[in-house]
Length: 237
Image 1 (cartoon, one colour):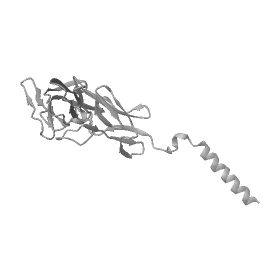
Image 2: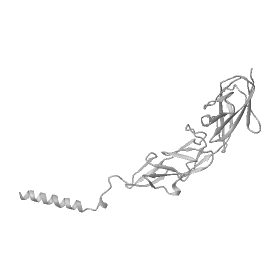
Image 3: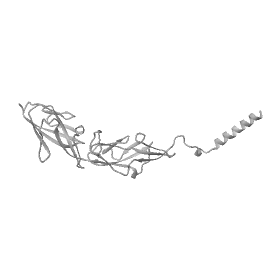
Image 4: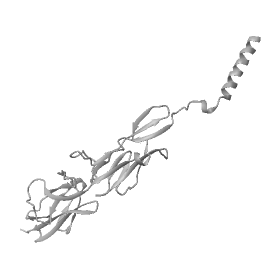
């Protein structure tokens, strides 16, 4: 019986010691985030003025994927993008979601920062600057070489049409860094000055009604800027 009391007393003293232990002495169940560093923050990323998310082109990306290094209180680190809250200081220029940056304008730059659970850990010099390489010129061509488009000194293309088509139009983009992308049609908004005579689909398919002789202007636009003009001289049979 005495042995039982001794065991009970020892257990009580041990529990009392644990209870008196400061909460500061206990290691956290989950390591806290001590810092976030955007990888490569000391360099500026260039981004083509394109909304298309396809492959990189000539060494510059149509989109920029940012990652960050999360440093925990126990010394561990991890590289991720999805666990963070990303923010652009100019969302009308560059949008960011899960670290993926997309151009929303033809010019400008934006500073991208990352936060974790509403606490901003990145300092101003640790943010990432995304600078847009602007589109300076666009030429319209015909994919199947059925049409011969001639450009004048003002950059306006002109072509004679005497068949209803369809014609597959495409666009060549020229950028401020003197690199070019052969086909940016997926970024282009097409319009026709007379849709009863000539229409262009979102993919650049041109159809013409040969009811009468007419001149129709086809325009391309990207980010609400007109970048190319094609004048159709339509001859009815």
